[in-house]
Length: 291
Image 1: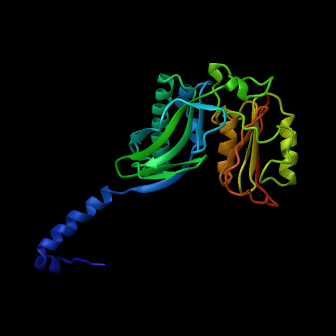
Image 2: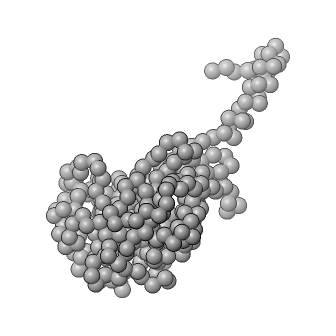
Image 3: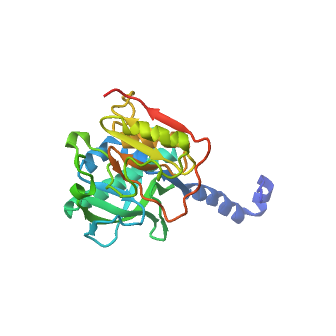
């Protein structure tokens, strides 16, 4: 480390000019990389309104079965300023807004092409390196802005064919929900194939199956699970049970929280990695609400 005192500056004037000019530039060039959960962004009302009840948004490079692709890879950049609320915001808050802006751009392009699905979504910062995750996105935060680069493909999914008989394929527009297509991973009533859960979690799932109305069940790789149904007990919580369950899971510090089932449909898609054995003492949470 070089420490320029006043005396050394008199002898090294040129070096002092370089040093004094360098440090502010370095501060302005801050580029903090963050990996953040995708799902809390879906709780934003502007995103829910844009997505509506007819659009599927699926992160991760894998293309779901039954998807008819309508485009090659497309690229979008979402940006946001740290002081967008007239006060300095945390990097994570600015990143959420940057992802929101990127998603709104993608949805606009999808609707322009008559697509009802955005699939194969991965982070692609500066088009240099892919960050592939079904639950997280990459954001780069600096002194003046946060940036989220995504690439994706537009597709068409037959939603009527993707959900079992008796399950509404498209909720009313005023009740837009996060509803990925059915995965066929397991029968909705069979808890034996749910990964990561111990016996307590499987019993909770069986009880969750008896709940009426809209509901969601989320699992995490570290054994955490969350369940939601009906309307939120707190109006500050997301109305969508899927978004609410994911938010609860992340609040419990669950690792790689993923939707397992929504209403009467299993939407979970197993990753290529081997599934670990369930933990003996998982974290649990439930959002209770009368409906």
